[in-house]
Length: 404
View 1: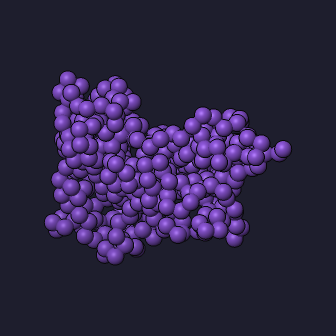
View 2: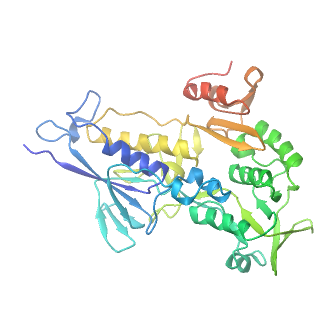
View 3: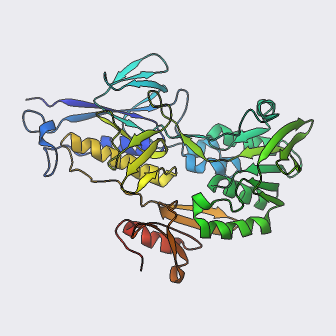
């Protein structure tokens, strides 16, 4: 008896989407293993074949977003950040909306793509500066205000700085990983950088409070200027640059304003933003899963979201494992627990973390120079400065260990 074919569509060809498609495409064939769902097997007892379609954005060659900043800083060319994609059908045709009842994805071209299971991995978009702020819209049209999220953004930053026969004057607005690394690298390369942040200790959510305090001191020591606890009130384009007016009445003159205020989840309709998932990355609609920066998790750890490359890869693989379990191709992988590490280079220091580093309950591990982030009595994240080895030791232990 012939085996059935199960159509799996993966929306998004970034870290989470490529990871999910790869895990699905490379899954071994075979009958239902112990612990799998026997009700999804074919009548002859064999599990169904999987046909995987990976949907990327229209006109886009998928790339590694983790390397975008290196393009902006002139360390890599755009060609070197292209992703190696899995053996799946690739459609460069942006998803516009999903009919979860009919199990159809409508693409930008108008084509309708049917699915049996759907993995939404469309990632995030940059949180931009408010366009109603005086002068922002005009400065954006002139290319004087940009984000640093996409490959196109990176090329724009690189070319803007290369257009001058002198060091650039860059104003970075934000306090997270992108702002810190960009300010650090551009300063190291000889540009004059002013870092403006709304928080008096920027980076607390990204790095944890202790690591953020260390990095804030480094910013003060290495950058041309720091303006913490300040917001942008107006932006005025000038003949040879831009004036950025802050809420204390001061004005900073520069060549480029790089906005790095974090990211927002970006899903097609009917979600139009975040896709809420449970502890197994299941959305409310039957047969739909979500992974990566588009997913907002509601589980025993609370409500949380992580938008960095390694965790997106892990979430994509877990979503694929859930699909395979539903098809009788693999055991249930259990609940997803974030353990993936991240590393940022800031002013010659290495900031590292793993798991959930946004939980407010923390304690220090002085012997390892780490901050332990706790949920109730369990360590769910770690962070530290110049403590990479310790972070990697803790990573596989997260969610299983109580602080010592």
